[in-house]
Image 1: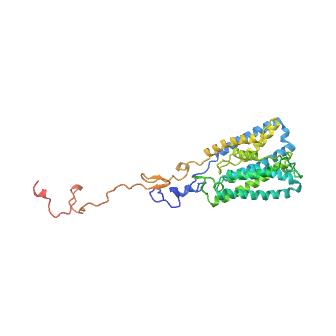
Image 2: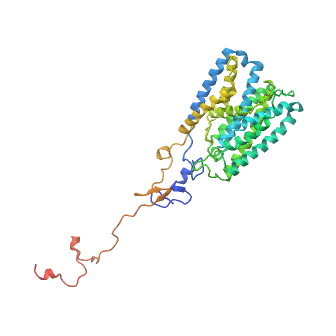
Image 3: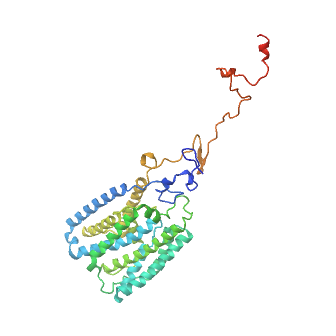
Length: 410
């Protein structure tokens, strides 16, 4: 229990003496969070830099091969953006929930192989079984994370290993069956991805939404459980992440890049996680920008097409590793310049509670100061109300006889 500035006892629902007005701006749970609003300026500056980079690479591609930005090639580019964008949204959703899903790549590749084999049955019949399997797999991953309360990267890596076991049964590339061509609706797919990415960023910037979505982020001991609300939100994020990864894999397979080669799919995981980090989402969870994911996906896809037009052979591992390294630097910038400002009167927030006098704070408890010694005892004999001399030291007491030294004449 703490003390306010007037020395009165603080309300019991304000832990560690923090006033309720400050707790309104806490994004984590009130007992461990940082008072104040996350700063968004670092995201705005970084997104302007991403936009400048995208314009530069697009101009270089136009100079190298202008046909890549016209006609059917442009439609293929837009579908590539939508496919990688769904993988990036899958990784970003799990990252925002502070439980990154590293299985998005293997899930996407498994969905690509499934669609390549079953596409001749029609889009609906090929998509529904994959959707059901992805939802069940995402739910199993979510239960492992929230029930055991283990890091998302570790549980999803175990899930990715299970998917890779299934993928290893394919030893040869699989040609895509069926006549579904996503390039016929390329513009709608791109606009849909862009709308989801931007609206997700806007909602993620709202204080209650950001606080709710990032509640699983550890603020003290990482092994401590964060409560039922955090577990529920994280579970939904992991299920949604797995489903989005499956849809992204279907788009990538259907975009007409030839047969789907077998593999592990971990290169797609590295690329997706690196792209979302490059867009400004923090590797620690919760914090992220608004347009960053959209700009980062467009930048990566345009760069890959420009590298192909320039005659360079750049593997997905190389691009993914580069953007992942850059994304880690962006995470440090976001966590350094995006954390809340210190609350105080100058920032428009109530001043932190300080104990009166020489009180100290130890271990989260506010210790009251030691009372100063005061003389509250009355004098031995009270002073008479009448005939009191001016000098208080000569005030006569209740005495019936004269002093002995007065009678001696001294």
